[in-house]
Structure formats: C-alpha cells, structure tokens
Amino acid sequence: MKNYKNILAGFFLLLSISSCKKQLEIDPKQNIDANVALNTTADVQNALIGAYTFMATGDLYGNNLVFIPDLYASDNYLTWRGTFTTYRNIASKAIVADNADVRRTWITAYSAINTANIVLSALNVVSDANTKSVIEGKALFIRGIMHFELVRLFGLPYDASGSNTNLGVPIMTKAVKTIDNVTNSVARNTVAEVYAAVENDLKSAITKLASVDDQYAAKAFLARVYLQEGKYALARDVANDIITNSPYRLITNSLEAPFRTKNSSEGIFEIKQNEQSNAGTSNDGLATFYASYQNATGGNVGRADALVSTTFYNSFETGDKRQTEMIYEGTGARTGFFTKKWYSFYDNIPVCRITEQYLIRAECNFRLGTSVGATPADDINTLRTRAGLGNVVPTLDIILNEREKELDYEGFRLHDYKRTKRTIGTFAYDDPKLVFPIPDREINVNKALKQNPGY
Image 1 (cartoon, rainbow, N blue to C red):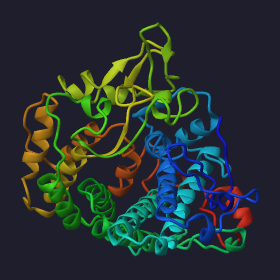
Image 2: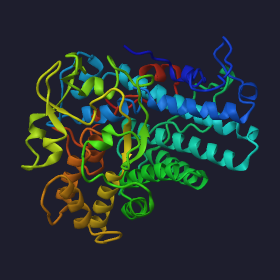
Image 3: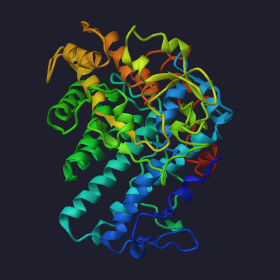
C-alpha cells in the first residue's frame, strides 16, 4: 500500500523531483553533505520544492492531515467502511503503537521539517538578498505548520487556561545532513514550547515572504494557531486582516467551485494535484477514500470507504445547500451519502480557505464581545446566505455549528472539539485515546522519547 521509512532515515534528503532542472546529487550511502549538494541558489530552491513535495503526499495534506482528524472524530459524523486496518483502528479509537498511518504521518512530517532545516542551513550560498529572504520565509513556513500539525495529533490539546507542560513533540531546528548528524537522544518538548516555536516560525516567515499569496498563507495558519490556543484577540485581528486586505474572496454563486477550480479566489493555500502528480488514485488520496460515483465510461471512481454519517446528514437545516449540493448519494463502489469536496483525484486540495477566516473572526468577536471588521451576526449570516438559509442571531453554539457545516470533512472536527472541550462520542476531549502514540520504532531507536499514556 505505502512505503515507510524510519524518521532518522527520512531525515536524509532522498527526494528526486522531476520538475526540477537539476536534481540533487545523492550518493549510495543515502546522505547529503550540504556543502556539496547545495552549492547554488538553484540547489537550495530545488530542496525547498522537495519539502513542499513531502507535504503533498498522502502522508500529509494529500490525505492524512485532512482525513485522519475527521476519521478520528467519526462518531455521528464519518463512517468508515474500508478494509484498511490502520484507518479502522483510528476510527474506533483502538490504535496500536505501530499503526502504519500514524507512523507515516510522523515520519514524513519530520522529513519535511528536516528538508526545511537543510534549506535554512544552506542560505549562505544564496547571494541575492531578496531571494534569500523568500527562501528563508518559505522554509520557516513549512517547519512551522508541520510542527503545528504534529503537536495537535501527538500531544494533548493546548489549554488556554493551563500551563501546557504536558509533552508535545520534539522541536527540530537543526538540519540532519549526514549519518554523523543523527542523534538518538531527542526528547519531546512541551506543548507550550512547540506552540511558541510554531508562532515564531510563522511570524518570522510573514516578515520575510515577498509574495502576497505566500504572506497570507502564513497568516491563515497563524490565525488557526491562535484560535487553537484560545488567543482570540490575536486570531480575530489576523483573520480580519486576511478578509479585509487579502485578494481572497468568497465565491457566492457556487459552494463546489473552491474544490473544483484550481487556485480559486477562496483558496489561500492549496496543495496542487494533477494527473501527473497526485496523492493517489487507488490506495491513497482524499478522493480515493471519499468518492463513490461512476465516470463517463461507467467505471467506479473512488473506493467509497468514507461515508457521511446519516446522523450528520440529517443535522442540516432544511434547504441548506451545504447538504443538498455538497453531499450526494453514492452510485459507485458503495451507496450512501458522500461529501463532494473530495470528488476528483486531480483537484487541488484547499488547505486554507477564506471561509475559515470569516468563522474565526465571528467566533473571536463573539467571545470577546467585539465587532472588529464585522459583527458576529454579519459574518455568520454572510455564510448562511450563501448556503441558502435565513439570518440568525448567533450564539456560540450556533457559530460552532456553522463552522462544522462549512468546514465539514476538511480536517477540522477533531481539533475543534478538543479546543472547545467537547466530548467525541464517549471520549472526553483530553482522553489519551484521542492522542496518537509515538511510533514504536521511534521509541526503540530514541530512548529519550516518552510514549503517550495507554500505549
């Protein structure tokens, strides 16, 4: 099904990128001497592309970072009917410490982080100041968001009223370039330390990136980080900046367009997919697991493993286009209800959309009793109007419900339930069973790593 590498092996830059004019030279010992391999600006830029390529795989945003948080929070939401044991165990909260999908997410995220660190360590070969700044900003962006995704899955949730001294994940800021650089004594940092490092990387990235698109991608993630931390004023202000000053706008005449149109006006940060490069069309990828329909020649598209729960389907208000237009009855490998967000193997994956920023601003303004940029009612009713619904006077529950309906099956449910301290089925928001195990093979080679409780 998938290939897996130990995290320490993954720290070596093994990637060969067909789109690059010049491939990095890699010797048979699977190590890279950065002084040899990254001699020019082009070498460094190609390595940076390698980090983005890691993020596009099914291990990360091509599937798992979007799919698994919803599968993990599957009660009355997402029904798993597939044969892959790794996903079935995640859905049933019966994960073992050698779960292959947990392992590959950890390994590839740290591979992306290490590639970013290799890029950062080689900046001295980049002579143009502006180019150097952009490369640095992009590498910091990658390192920041990968640490963020890891700490949300492998650590207990950030508690705005707590000390957050519980264990998160190791913060990696030093490049592993050769076997001699490998250390087997890397400990886990606290949740508080990881979030602080994420903030610092993203804020620094914003100051260094030249492209408006790149800057707002980093800001979109920073707003998400602040919301997860309960830093509502900061999250509100970043979201308001994005809504007010960025080039991104809601598409008002089609809910489906952001998922079918590449680089749409809603897509702040998208993972590119096409026929030549995608996360998978048979055993991996979002459309592989979510889709269930017949194509023009009568062939089945998708495995139809992930169904919209009937309970969730029935929770929409009558006439809500997010139900009638974005959920369909399967005609392919399985019948039942399926989300239309992940419908084609070759559509881009919008990881950050402007829609989320309206929801962040509305929630934060409501919690703070403010109306920065707009009132909570204005923001929520803007989204409800697009969905074909009437206006409401928002409460926090209404705002959270609108968030759930707008962002369904985009990887938010687990993280939203944890940050708002809601139960998932019979599991409390901070139940150890809602936290991934540190992969067994990592514990075996690194005795400084402590395992999460229950594993």
